[in-house]
Length: 338
Image 1: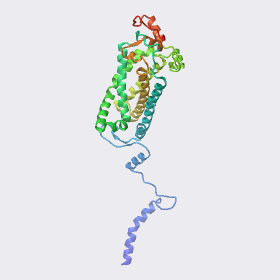
Image 2 (image 1 turned 90 degrees about the vertical axis):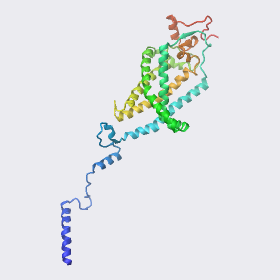
Image 3 (image 1 turned 60 degrees about the vertical axis):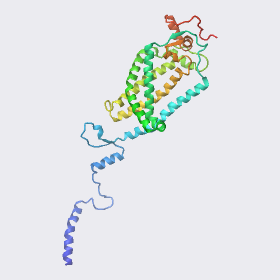
Image 4 (image 1 turned 30 degrees about the vertical axis):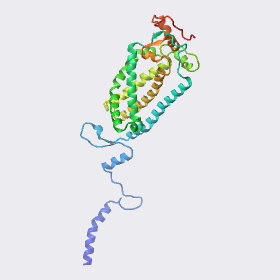
């Protein structure tokens, strides 16, 4: 009986031994390890994800973008939005506010030398003022709604609560998308109206060397727009064009580019926007509380003659020579007179 059982065991072991001999790599001999079997599709996808590659599935709907399960570049974009943009925006906006406060404390409000003359000269016509306010008002709403996307959860949400913050963010998004169109239209019209007066020239170099009259007591010569205003103009036109183009790529997703292009568009859009906001804070300050007589240029369109001579003397001379003189009560006081 024992011999019969041993013979039966040998018969069962024979196929296994034969298989081992036909596969000499499975020997257990050092230096000749068992080769890895080709990984299946799921393992390849997991390996790709671990190595930072894109992971996609199979779909039957027309939108093939929905097949992406993991898009590693999205991690870089998320870090940019949550960290880099917050730092750049915070430093730019708060830094500019700090500079303006220091400027106000050191220089005070820039006065009209000799005081108002009582005579005015037309600075901007109705079309120019209307277009300026269309661009300015839409820019302010676009800026506030855009800043809310970056800082709202940290600043506004704790103050107003989740319900109000949700409503503000929702309507802000609608405003941000739709007001982009009149903003762009205003930029085009602004370019057509003012480009001829904003071409840099030698007078601008001398104006910059003199610090624009902010350093010392001298007021350098200037035409209709000085070098600082020309800088604001070109920042508005070029920066506005950049945020408009990249913004439309985000408003109409995947119409002009893929996900990588949209992420790049968002980065350009947001960085240029926060830098423009910082610059416009300085522009708003000088045009309102920072300089006596400046706000009238964009409200009534008429500025005091002494103000015009102080800041844009070459333009005043040209206007008077062409017969477009000042509205004059009889008792006008010359610029700089006591």
